[in-house]
Length: 156
Image 1 (tube, rainbow, N blue to C red):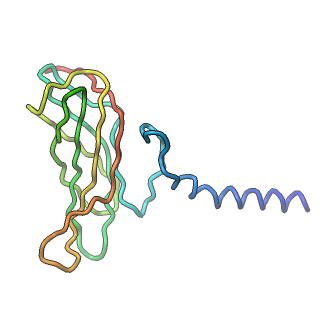
Image 2 (cartoon, rainbow, N blue to C red):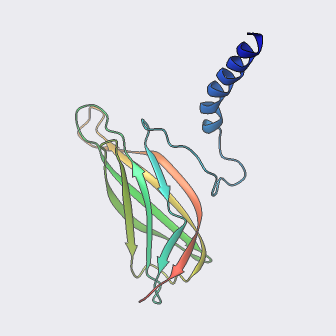
Image 3 (cartoon, rainbow, N blue to C red):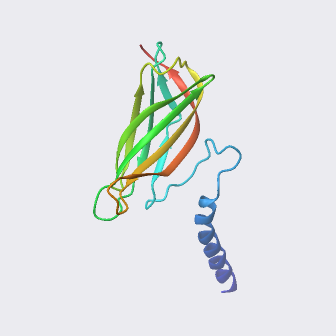
C-alpha cells in the first residue's frame, strides 16, 4: 500500500511538472529545440529546409495556428525574413486564417537576393490585426520563431 502511494505521488509530480518543462524559455540560441505548441495559443513553425533555384529565388514552408477570439475572425499574416551571408531580406507575407486550426504556409520570393544552397537563418512572425474596439486595426506580434534551416537547390 505504501509503495502504491509513493508511485502515485511520483506520477502526480511528473504530470504537474510536464507543462512547466514545456513552457521553459529556449536555451542557448533556441534553434532546433523541440517545443510543444498549446492548442489554445497562436503558434508558428518553420520547416527545416527550404528550396532555392539557380537564380536565387527561394521558397520557404511552415505551419501556423491563429486562435479565433470572440465572434469574428481576426486578420493575420505570417511574415518571414531570410538571412544567408550578407543577404538579408523580408520575403513577404502569407495571409493567415484565425480559426484555431493548424494550417500550412508557403512563401515564394523571386528577385530578392542571391541565395544559394546551404545553411541560412529564418525569422518568422505571426502578426495579428486586432480592432480592440477601434476603427483602425492594430498590429500585434503573437508568435515568433527563429530557426537555422538548409536551403536545398532545385530546378530553375
